[in-house]
Structure formats: C-alpha cells, structure tokens
Image (cartoon, rainbow, N blue to C red; front, top):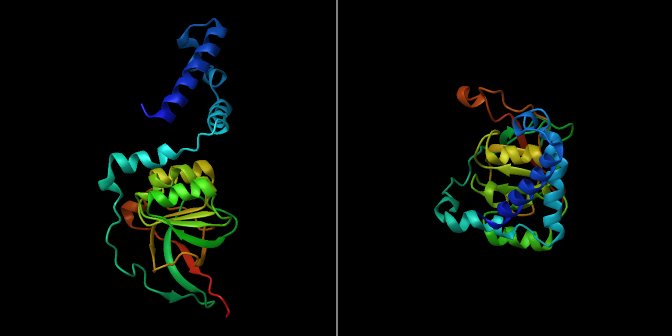
Length: 223
C-alpha cells in the first residue's frame, strides 16, 4: 500500500475498532445502524489534518501515478484550434465551451495556468497557487493536479465528463470546473471567464450529444 493511503487506512481502522469496542454490541447491529457514530466525515477530516500538520504535503501522491504509468500522462497531439473563435452578441470573445460540473450563482474570472508536468505541480505545492488561478489541464492532468485542486479558483479540463474522477473531486472540494472542453489556444496568464452559472449536463447528455453549454470568454485588456 502507498504511504498516504496506508497511514489513513490504519488510522481509520484503529479509530473504528476503538469506537466499536466501546459500544459492547455485535458488529452487524452497529455497522448499518450506527456507522456514523463509529466513523464520521469529521473523523476523516481530522485524520487528514493530522497528516498535514505533521508536514505531509502529498508530494508522493502527486507523482506516483506518473511514475508507475508514464504512458498515460503524455500530452496528446491536439489541433491548434479545437474551437471556432467567435464573439458573442455583447462583443465578448468566445474562446471555448465545456460541461459545467457545479452550478454557481456567479461566473468565475481569473488568469489561466497551463499545467501538464509534475514539476509544475511540485512547484505549486511548494510555493502555493496564486490567488484566482484557473488551471487548464488535459484529461490525465486530473490525477496529476488532484493534490492541489482545492487551491484553484476554477478548472478547465480538455477531456472527461462531469462523472469523471476530476468531476467527483471538483464537487467534493467545491471547485468551479468545466469538463470535456473545446478551447482556442490560451497562453499562461490569459484572463478568462467561466460560465459556471450554466446547468450541468443531463444524465443522458453524453449519449444524446447534448453537451458543451457552458461558455468560456477571453477577457481582453482595453490597452
């Protein structure tokens, strides 16, 4: 078992065993009726916080997938422009579309960071993520950036679906995220606006092709 899961699972088992022993009941009577008394989400957060307070920064989990299966984390060749550049009726430059994971009350605006290498993730782990950063990643980058996802103001993922692993993480950490995106070329530092006010895709959207309703705009300087 990898170091972090091993540490976490051992702590869970130890706490659950201690709590169960104190009940004096049979396991079958506790596991379904009182499972949240035995182990709760607050307990999970406390165990994670204990690991963080000890100095563990998840570096290993950020690199293990890349090291064990490097063939999965090679950037695929993409067309220079996957989305036809256009302007909306209000004059804003429309540079992409995607599938919204979490419907928000306001759009998200921020500078993009194109992330495709473990070295970038390690640098962000060490130095911190600049406030307001919107990560642009390909589908495999969801695993690469998982240890730092909660630090982003938003995420643009060029693959996957709202039911992908990254979509699950985005909902868990409440990070505004667009999946399955088609975008124009973006440069590091380009400021974009994500239409995370759009409704997430319906349950059958990927079967019917009814996707790509959340828009991405480039915020152009007036100079």
